Length: 288
Image 1 (cartoon, rainbow, N blue to C red):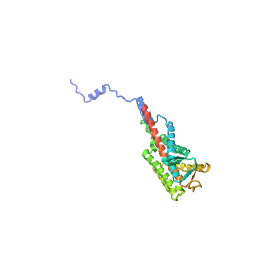
Image 2: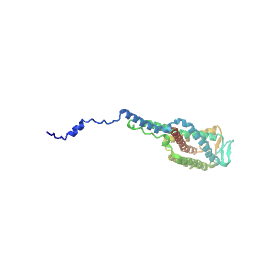
Image 3: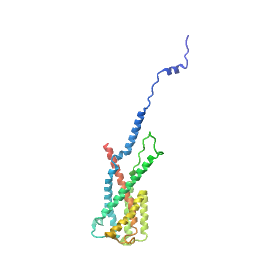
Image 4: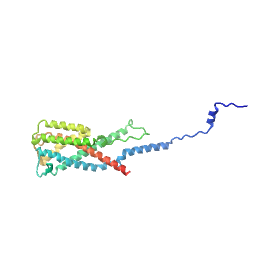
């Protein structure tokens, strides 16, 4: 007697055959891949920070001090050339630059360059670090555990404007200095000169900076600068302004010039900081 083949036989036969084991990723492999991803993200995030950024501050201080000592007397010679101020002897003259200065003038401008050129990047990095720590501690903004954390932008990337705008900012500051020298020549400061200089300085700040920390340093320079000059003039008798309309010591527009120095020198300090961080990252990558 011939048995008929049931249509269910193939399925029954397949069910009786040994099953092939599918390879599932183990928990250990998943954890290791996750760790590798986090390690790679950490390398990408900290690849330019193999050398601690604190070790870059001596170079930052040296560069900003040198730039202040070089640029400051050149700008200040505009005032002495147009009779805005007169130094007490002994003075130093550089004929081919038509520059009159003293031995202590580059020192003061070097200190100002350090305060503005290093102080602003320092505040940038502190604010950037506090902002990034606050965002990572927030549970709503934390990424999934399986994905690597994104690399945060560093302070030089956030606030640096690049060389073109930095050089334009410094040029605008020199023009404001020249405008004050020509407008206040021989102590003849017209009434429109202070508001005009303040308008130029505020425009420079809006174009080159616009940050709260930049406003803080620019306002501090506008207040501290005349205060230092008051001490140099009244206590040490090192020089005199031809226009003594403000406090019987200096012209009323001098604070606007100091305010303009904040965004200009600060932009240079940010540019120097970004270059130092970039070179440090390139050096660490070459060493790897």
